[in-house]
Length: 248
Image 1 (cartoon, one colour):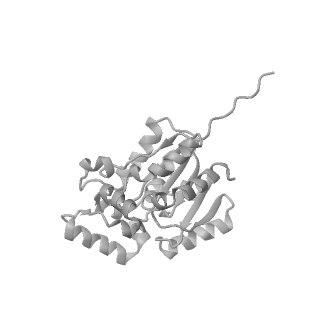
Image 2 (cartoon, rainbow, N blue to C red):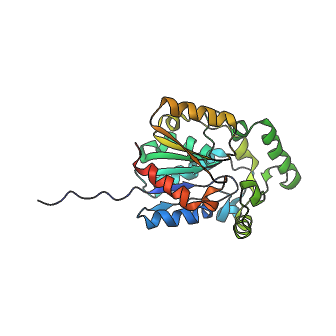
Image 3 (cartoon, rainbow, N blue to C red):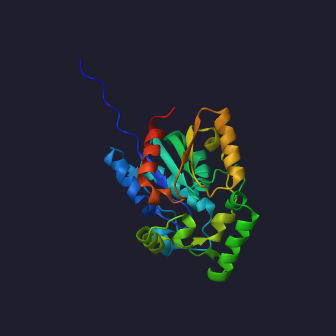
């Protein structure tokens, strides 16, 4: 009698945050691939190696479509979807169309919006106004220039130089557009990883903790690392992501 076929490890889709690109996952992706997983690190339109496509017309809906298209054209199924920071806005919106292809969604110090909320709602009025002012000062009124790596908690000189040489501008519109329905994201099995100290606003963390307390499908983890943990603590991030593969 032949043995039952062994299912391959589920793939990972790692989605970057604002003004970053798929490049930021390089260290984590290497660990996950070493563990036998296929890993995708898409870059959103206008950012990273796609920065030549930067346009004032790029909004949150285009970034959502970027992620949906990655799943559709790469034929991705049963994936662990990981979103960092602004990427949580994109992943939450995309889940309405890709939830059936996602085993588990992981928010790494990421925004977790309710339907109709914008990135500005997530960061609060003061920070949203600061983004608009940054666009006025250095982005022709419509794009946000890169911030120094120290903003993301990257202090090692070599790491900071790497991050600063790769971060790119981002259309302000992506931060101001409201997300569509996020009902499937909020009902899907997942994990929220809070980096300590977190850059997330208290109201985000409070409502995610509340869901965790009420719903065993959402696990909650604390990671003592900076916001750009995929750069500064890749082994620790990878360990939690591998835990998310099998968590129930």
